[in-house]
Image (cartoon, rainbow, N blue to C red; front, side, top):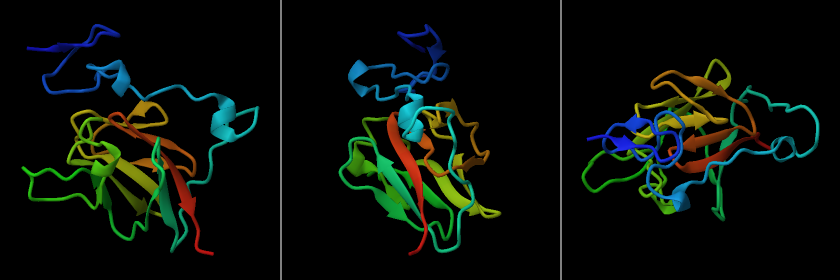
Amino acid sequence: MMNTCPHCAYDNRVGVLVCERCGRSLYSVDMQVTRQMTEHEMTGRAGAFERGTSRFNEGASVVLRILDAAEPVVFQPTKPTVLGRVSPSNPRTPDIDLCPYRAYEKGVSCFHATIYVYERDLVIADLGSTNGTYLNGQRLAPHQRQVLHDGDEIRLSNLVARVYFKNPN
């Protein structure tokens, strides 16, 4: 049995919460948090979009500002940091548990994506998640790293966050 997307009519695999073609929620308009950002929202000003740096300084922290969350998630990627959610049926746990941000209902996998430093760049890789990882609206291929820039938007299924680099001092 397939799950047909109500938005683009694509037949998705059973158990998928987000359309594999268009990235929209298969079940509830209320769950859909993806939206196109205006150029002004991305840059803070009108004009051409300028991405922040991809260079990640030694001792810097990653700040994830999750949509609708009061406090950001802050961590130092001294090793590959796995983002996901804790599950009672899985004895392994991710480095950062996104359950407090409604990860389960937003379709985040137990081991969804990893963020780490590679050759002085901060990178993200999808870990073969069921509902996909998106960088600035583009779905990432599983297990292939993509460079993150300061200010980029990542989406783990329907959980949206903005990534910032925080240098020491």
